Image (cartoon, rainbow, N blue to C red; front, side, top):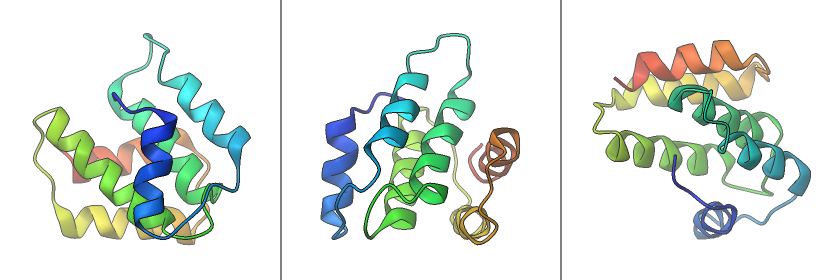
Length: 111
């Protein structure tokens, strides 16, 4: 996904948050440069950093939803918005760390 660290921070600021966990964001952004990983797996790393690691003081799930919708638009994918919302909330509630599980959930909502 083509998004910079600064863009992600700016998106979250629109939802009223501020960056809290710089190291987790740096790790997720570094993963974006790994050409061996698929686009869904790269998105899963970003979502885990945002939702589970609580990157921001506020608006984590909203930022994640925005990111998913931008991902879908960039990749010309269809989004089941109700399922996407359910998956994001489930990831947050269960503190999911398993990238494969996050990737699978997002693939079901964004096709």
